[in-house]
Length: 81
Ligand code: SF4
View 1 (cartoon, protein in one colour):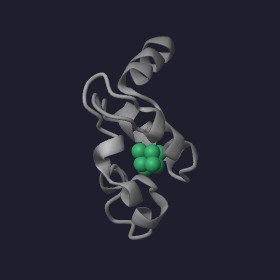
View 2 (cartoon, helix red, strand yellow):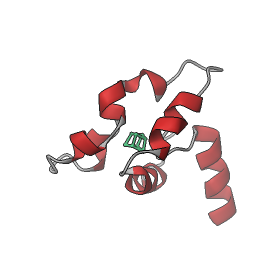
View 3 (tube, protein in one colour):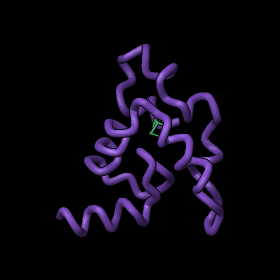
């Protein structure tokens, strides 16, 4: 349910954030569990870019944000950082 932290003042976000429809389980899986479903949902989400930007800006460490896992975000930060 990442939309709440992206822009809580924007009432249109919940309808656009596909994770709001699926629930948080896919996006915060148990360690070692697959993130494939979460990434598949993110690929279809209109908020993907804003969501990823938010996660990178706020150094979100856990879960899938904007289609990237925590390891992928860490790698992206190292490359661009
Ligand atoms: S990109 Fe993924 S995690 Fe972010 S709001 Fe959309 S569905 Fe949720």
